[in-house]
Length: 224
Image (cartoon, rainbow, N blue to C red; front, side, top):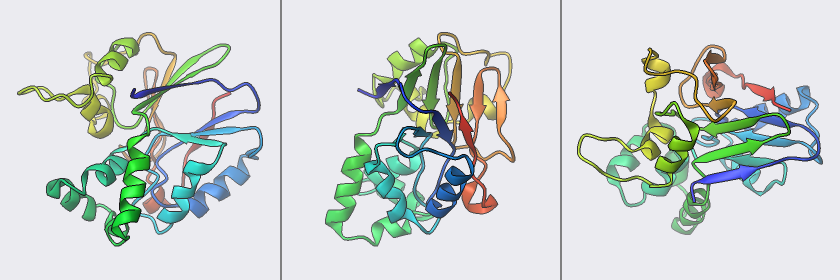
């Protein structure tokens, strides 16, 4: 339910970091990469909205055949903010004002669309298996991580679910140590969420959110 499996037989596949409402910047970067809208595929690691000024434009990406994405914590806040006042307050303080200024029916339409986004994407190519998750991967085994994600956002005292960590976590990049190593059963994993000055590689995990709204820059990489 929460994992989407992809393959792509024509053109190239690109990955992009957190867009955060910077639609024009995205288009500029795609032009520099000679992106072929008829044949190429762009995979987003989540958080296409909030902070930047072009949120409605970014929503149109979801209707494009050349674009796909995983759910980020900002999409999750649109889903939960209607009924969870604590989440709504966090969202309002982190760029979500535009969402709550919309008519109720439009908010519902957007949140429903976001609720259909996967938590993980797995891309299978002829030579690699590549994973995409927004924030953190709390296991050194991709297959075990997927199984835990499929349990959803369970609540056990003292335990944070893999679902929550996939959307909000930062442990691997902030507290990298011997507990975190190469993630087995996957060749590469691409993540966003935690802003870095330039892309960071930790074993086979790549962090690619370079803070588009503040840096006025956006990281895009051709994978195949």
